Length: 208
Image (cartoon, rainbow, N blue to C red; front, side, top):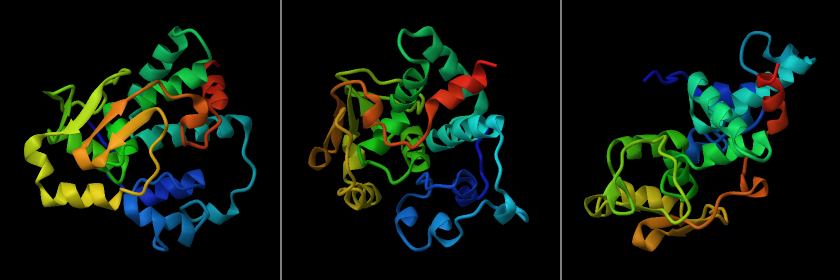
């Protein structure tokens, strides 16, 4: 499947905020947003006015880039969110949060969504004791995510877990880094989703 392979710091700069796409680098002075807070490109510093459609598009792009999903995937998530009872915007973010690679990232087992996706694809994790290498797999309440026994002794894996040991874990997850595992204890509420995006703008965009 196609993936974006360009400079990810440009994506954060385009959205005007840190999306933590480069992991640890985003917390240092080398962060692209910290060094150049304006949009990339020749006219990046000249952009001032944004139309209603532009605001809606930016909200959608911000969410899509944060979770690392393609346009087609994102539309499918929106369709699934729309079919569920409740608020479509919150349903959409909840579905994205339940992705396997996002849960790995939220548990502190990876420095970025991209790294989490790579670790999942390389077969380093199990779900409820069964090896799973599908980043888009949707986790449910009660599911236990754990590193494989053979991966726990890997020095690179240990360094990744140690580097992210102090990062806060959302309340809907329970992380036990000493045991190299975590559990989904509930579905995330909107206030527990750490993403500054106005999801109602996404709904407006797709409702046209």
